[in-house]
Length: 178
Image 1 (cartoon, rainbow, N blue to C red):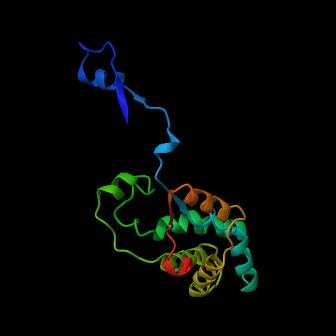
Image 2 (cartoon, helix red, strand yellow):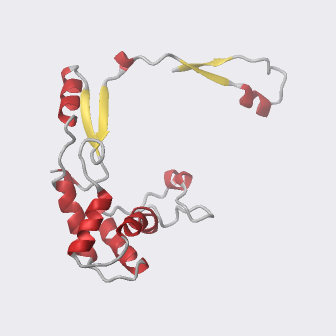
């Protein structure tokens, strides 16, 4: 909650008034927190995406720069196949968050399916042959077995002991988290 600080813009045009309004926020009060939500991977669970890609490519005997492959997979291929991609792009081709929020809501696809599509695009981009299903399965298997960071258990337990609701949020498919 905040308050509006009054300025000397009473006679200014409305655009100038809006620019002169300053929001004053109340001091942070930790005692007001009732719940804490964590992302799963790279927050509570430890996994190295680039190392996983390197291992998968080596085991599949696919020769290419694993760092470039992982980078393209994460950024360019993701943006191309994201469930938000159709109809939600800005003029420069990037995903437009305003269009995403204004709808329409896209048809849902699983993270595994997005990964399969990302592998297809990334194999084509790097002009290598690979099995996209096998790649998506590998990522799912690694995530499903990812160990928690050593301090994760203690942090979650301490928060719960203070009476806070603790939640896990992830864009990973449910079977990854089971």
